[in-house]
Length: 266
Image: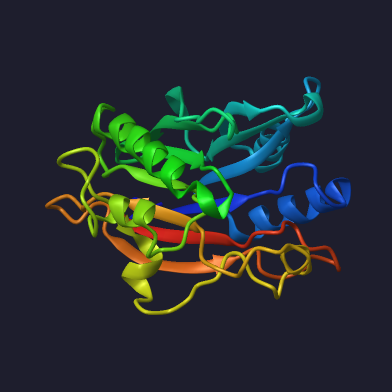
């Protein structure tokens, strides 16, 4: 068997326990099994104290996982998770900026994954959601970039995934990609969709999805897979990016978000 030369990373917001969540769970699992990504970053993952969706999905895939609990609506955690086909050597969690009166208990999780070519640093998060929370999200981005900068370097550049609830031209996303003043010196990440499909929409929040169509928020691309600059060897170079999770499974839409799947050179 030859050495693996690429790495696939998927980011997906699973819509917590909203809508027909029990019917959606098999559709989520089927989509992940079909795509078979190496690493999966998930947002709005529920944990009710007895069951954890990330753990169940990881078990079904035969993957390792790490979970970061965030807000706790109705006593049931809504968190972020990272799943990996390779062992997770360690993980860490930070709380992101939370403004009084707009508390959403947002967190970020880092996993150091023991990949076939060395350690892969992967980060997963979910930022404040309201349109007028841009100032809050900018402070959360500063927290995120500081978290990334102080983390150990890996065999691949850092990979940051999540639901950022912000358009690519928003101040908070431009701060990540180096198009606006960086809140943390010396760090900027590439937007994998923009790298592969410049000037295209790549909607992840789309009115084609009936769950999103019921929501008053406008369509947009608010889910991302970002990555640092590739190494001199080419490790970490973005090879491809596409939208998935954008169709029903046996009549059931898995989530109100579409997912982003990115392939990297290793």
